[in-house]
Amino acid sequence: MIELASAQEKVLRAVQQAAPVTVALNHAYGLVLAENIVSQEEVPHFANSAVDGFAVRAQDVANVPATLRVVDEIAAGGVPHVAVGPGETSRIMTGAPMPSGADAVVMVEDSTEGKTPEEVVLSASVQVGQAVRPRGDDVHIGDVVFRIGDVLHSAAVGVLASINAPHVSVVPRLRVAVLSTGDELVDDGSPLALGQIRESNRTMLMGLVTQAGCVAVDYGIVRDNEQALEETLRRAADECDAIVTSGGVSMGAYDVVKALLGRIAHMTWMQIAIKPAKPFAFGMLDAPRGSEVQRQVPIFGLPGNPVSSLVSFELLARPALRKMMGHAALHRPSLLAMADADFLRKTDGKIHFQRVIAQSNSDGRIHVAPVSQQGSHQLAASALANAVAVLPDGDGVVQGGEVRILLLSDLVEEA
Image (cartoon, rainbow, N blue to C red):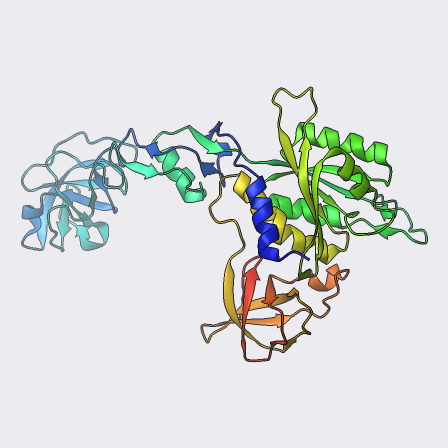
């Protein structure tokens, strides 16, 4: 058997980051920058009010209450029409441009009506610059706002819009072919015959691929027929950047996937020292000769048992896909948690991964408890798990002990 770290290293070493592309900003969410972004504009572009209130000369409200004459009203999106002189003020809304002559803003909460409609009484003194957002307060021309390798999450995309960067150079989102293999699989809703099972791995993997930030492309179920499988795989290699298959990578005599891939691709067959997900296949398939660019497409051959398929994807396929998309953080977050139950195991030379529910508790600790069933075929029992506990070879962890987990989704909050 091969150690997990060695298997992960072998896979990651074999895959390469995709070539950069330029995309419209509205297609860049979640992608990794392939260039530094230097602002060509200032944000904000003009000095504006941070509050609804009255634009004033600070010296005119040094002694309060102060009665000032209202000479203008400036809405957000509007422009000042009159400069503010001694004893004067302009009513101003949040985000509206500051009028000439004014150097601060008094909040509307600190105002009352004057004796005439043209007057206002202000009851708060302010310092010069108070409640004013200066030009360039957030971003200056020439600022490097983001750098190569930064991930464009929602706030970052918003910043790029604010500096008028409608297109960006990024590492592209991968198109990943997903397929299941086996004569026993059924996905058309028809009654099950003896020996048949409902297809679930492909459906699950489509979600996991999408969650990893890729575009999942469904290639359906491929029967145990070498010609049909070869045609599907070659089409997938032509149309996609990576291929994820489920089933047919163990030591069985009828594993058509293994026989075919051994003939048409450059494959490595691994027995990894983990439980579940011991069998794993990885290799490269040449894209068809008709492709515009000659390239090799990585294939991740996952085991057929549903939980094994999930664990294998998380530990081996997902990090490689993320590397290809330029991410620096390849693996799921690793945290220490308190065991709320015994996580016992027997020494067998493997790392065990147990599905758990991880909860953030009021004591400031993360607590974990195992899901009800841990069999590699028992997907339903694992469906609500949001983490896996990592149990090195040995006797495991007793209740109250510390256990390392890989967080697969958000923590559950304590009720």
